Every structure is written in C-alpha cells, then in structure tokens.
Image: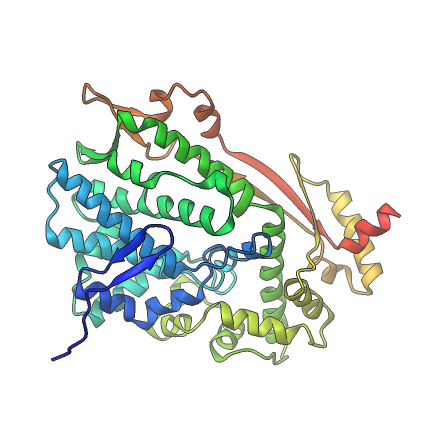
Length: 414
C-alpha cells in the first residue's frame, strides 16, 4: 500500500494556500499530461512586453480549482445542494479545462494542428485520463460537455463569469503588472447564488461585476491584444508556417521528435487518435524555443530572419488603425520589402501582413450574467446596472493591424 500523503497544501502568490483535498485530484496533477502545463506559457509571448508574465497554465489550473472549491462552499452555505461526487467532478473539470493547450497557449492554437480548438483537445485528454483512472472522470466530462442536468454547474466552468475568467484576470494582472485588470474575486464568489438552476450574482454584488467587465476590457487592450504581443505572436505563427513549408519541400530542420512529427504531418480534428494525442502531449514551449534558437542560423533567409525577431526581440513595426489597410498600401510595402531584403514578393508576405483583433468585454447576445434582485427576479447585468458604459462595453470593437519590417519605417523617417 502506498504511503504517499496525497492531501497536499500548495502556496500560491494570488490566493495563499491551495488545498488538494482528494487523492484522485492529486493523481491527476501528478500525471504527465497535467505536469506538461508547467511548460506552457499562460500569456503566450506577452513576456516580451511585460517581463514578469512568465507564469504557466499549471498555475492557472490550480487557481481555478481553488476558487471552484471556495464557490462550492459559498453555494452550500446558501442552501444549494451539491453532493461530494458533484464537488469532485466540478473540481476535476475546472482543473483540466485547459489541458489541451499547445505551446504558448492561444498564440499557436491553429498552427501546430489545424481546425481543432484547445477545448476539443482538452476533452480528448479527459477521455484518455478517464480510461486510465477507470471511469472516475465520467461525471466531470459530462459537466464539461454540458450534458449534466444541473445547468449552473456548466456555467461555473464556462460562462461569462466563470472560474476560468476570474482566475486568469486576477493572475495575469498580478504577473504582468497591469493593475487595471485586478478584480475582487473573493467578493464575487461571496455574491454567487443559484436561482432556477442558473448561476446568478446577488444584487449587492453588481458593482463587483461591473468592475469585472471593465477589468476584462482593459486587460484585453493592455495585455492580451497589446500590439507588440500581437506582432510577436503573428511572427511565431509565420515561423511555424515557413518551417512546415521547408519541411514539405524536402528540407530537414533541427527540431525535437514531437515537433518534427507535426512539421511533417498535417493534423486536423479528424486525424486525432491515441497515438497523435500522445505525440501532442510531448510538445511544449521548450520544443518551440529550442527550434527557433537553431533556426536563426538556418540557410533559409526567411526562417532565419523571423527566428531572430523572436530570439532577439527585434519585432516588426505594427500599426493599429480603425480601418483596414488598402490593398495598394500593402502591395507597395511588400514590393519595397522584397527589394530591400532581396527576396521574392511571395516571401515578402512573411514580413508584411495584416489582420484584425476584436475586443468584446461582455456579449449581450450570449448567455447573460444574471443579477438576482431582492424580489427574486433575474435581470441582465447591463439592464440592472446604472452604469451606461456597460452597454457600450457589450459592443464589439474591431481594430486592424498592419505589420512590416522596421527598416522600411526607418527609411521613411529619413
């Protein structure tokens, strides 16, 4: 019989002590699939903008589990019946909700594999773990899929005010130093309740919800969609695209075995089987950074220059604007880049590119955040709030970006 004490206490800089109260949760945390999250950056390449943002998906997952435990305590104190099995399932579901993230999280979500989201891969990992642990994750998977009859439990995991968002806003704000993103998660948790099988916030917590929505908007503009982060993450996807192009052209690149597998093979949702899932589980940030360090010395000019941009943080110029760049402007920049760097106009597309980013702090068309009024009626937070700016924050704001080499910017300034 094992003598390992599986009821651990972990020290977290955000919440203090986090308790592992269940041997199964301890075993899941110890599994290589979950330990891999120690090597997956929570905020992609945001550390190139905010040097402190080196925290990982491992931190985030444990934080989500902790506030799920606290929320269950609060709901039970208000008469919401949650069984021990349901409690364990909720904690497992939120612990594993991001286990399907690939290297650098969202930055490379559709670069390593195609047409499959990290949520889908998380479910594949959960199904695999459920086999390993002999069906003990079945209820957690049902809740995660939205197949369990108690709707509010899915809302705790995935909604506009869930454990995921509450932890990443507070955690990312802390590590990045973007104070505007900080929220009072403990106050929000104390205001949770359940009415008509829906997760709601009691009326006296409305100002905390308003702060949460505003903080989310500010974190997106200042951190997640910071223009330098956008430029860096786009360059990262361009590097992988070029590496795949060279590999399929018969050129062998220096790369770890799992990265080599995904360079050589085009993998989509339909292709995922147990063997491919295992290969994916071996892949993390270290594979990508190690490859890019080697590729900066590659004979291919495009791959080499793009890799140097990340390694040396010598990123392209990026302009954010309200309107999409004209085709003539983009074509002219590509022609100048091709001439300046001595490459083809097709290759210049790796250095001159455009796109768009969108920020919507609250989606009024989606499942609303319900405020439970004193007369027990429910109201959308936007309607219940006396803050007119919440209506404005529910409208999506789209900005367009245009990236091109700094050398062109410097030439224009001369």
